[in-house]
Structures are given as C-alpha cells and as structure tokens.
Amino acid sequence: MKLCDIPMKKLFYFISSMIILSSCGVRYESVPYFQDLADTGVVEEDIQNYSVVKIQNEDVLAITVSSLNVEASAIFNMGNTTSLPPNSTTNPAPLATANGFKVDQAGDIQLPIIGSIHVAGLSTIAARELVQERLTAYLKEPVVSLRIINFKVSVLGDVARPGVYPIQNERVSVTEALSQAGDLTITALRNNILLIREVEGKRKYVRLDLQKKELFNSPYFYMQNNDVIYVQPSNAKYASVDSSYRNVSIILSALSVIALLISRF
Image (cartoon, rainbow, N blue to C red; front, side, top):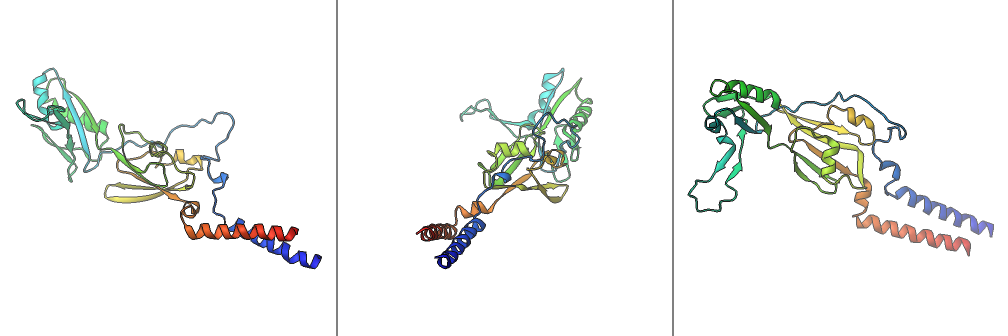
C-alpha cells in the first residue's frame, strides 16, 4: 500500500503545484495604493512639485475684457463668441457658442485692434497681465480674465471609463484624472502607469507607481494639457478572456480532484 500511495501523492502534489504556479489571479498585496505610507498617525509634507501650466501652440484661450467703457470693451470680446444675427430665423437658443482665441504655430494670438501678442510659454497669469498691459493704450482701467478652454487629458487602458476628459481648472493630478475615469480595475497594474506628455515639440514617456507615496512628489504628478495616461492590464485580465487558459485551468482542477479521490480510496 505504501508503494502505491507514494506515486499518487507525488502526482497530487505535482498537479496542485501546477495549478498554483499557473494561476494568474490578482493577489491582494498588489491592489492597495501607496503601500509605503504609514497607516497610523498623520504624515505631513510640503508641496514642492506643482508646476504652473504653460500656454502652448494650438491652445485656445477664452479672454474676457471689461473696463469703464462697456462699448469699447465689447470690441475685444468679439473673438470669444459667434453670435447669430438679431433677425435670424434659426433656433435662437443658444445665441452664442464659445470659440476663444487660438494660439498659432508661432505662439501668438490675434486680438482686435491690438494685433499679435506672443503668449506661448507663459502661464495664464502672465498672459493675462500682458494682455491687460497692452489694453491700457485703448481702455481705461481694463480688467482681463484669461483661461485655457481646451484643457483636456486622456485616460485609456484598464480603467472603468476610458475616455477624453475636459478639465475646468489648471490644477489636476494623476490621481484626479484616474478618478474621473472611474479608477483602475482590480486587474490593472498599479506600479506601471504610463504618462505620455507632449511639450515644446518633444514627447516624453514617464512611468509612475501608484503603490508608492513618492508619486505625490513626482514632477509629473500634476498634469499638463493634452497629457495621456495609459493603464496596463495584468495577466489576470488576459486570463479572464482567454478561453484556452480557462480550459487548461478546468482540466487541471479536475485532475487534482481525481488524484485526491484516488489517494484516499
């Protein structure tokens, strides 16, 4: 009996080992974010990696001008909207759609009367101050509002809702962008997030790790206009849709059960 039992036990252990080694299931240890962050007490640190968004070619700026002379100010606001004629017979709602001022390939915008203003490479604050300074020659005490209206980020890969997301303000982080996309799925690789950024005619590929708190101090934690995030799926994602893998798993499971029954009886 002992001589017969030994080979059967070896077969059982061999099959069980194959099942364990071939399994591509998601381990809990790979799921939590920021694993090296202390889980007790309060951790405090200065924010030193925030970088101000700079205006780039092809950006679209919404520029609103006001002054003591309302009629004179209206001339500079014409570029922001396309209005229907007062006697138009088409649907009157809405009467205007936002267009903004597009930054051309030379990095300039064209304003009524003023003409060309170079804004590429400037922050929106610096661009606003520059426009306001140029307006003082035509308006008394001008007040300018300026923002980027085509600010967007793209999130694709193993997330709940991949897509292109417009951003209403200039301060958005990688974690906020992923949250808008419904967060990573359980099968996503959290330590190999790819950030793709195009700036000043160059494209950068940056790897980010959501499992480490150092992400918060990364110079790429805060996103720029047109950034792309790609979330790579793990092997478990592939295994869930691969029929051949599922068939092998079923066969191995059945063999293990048979081996267990034989070893007992």
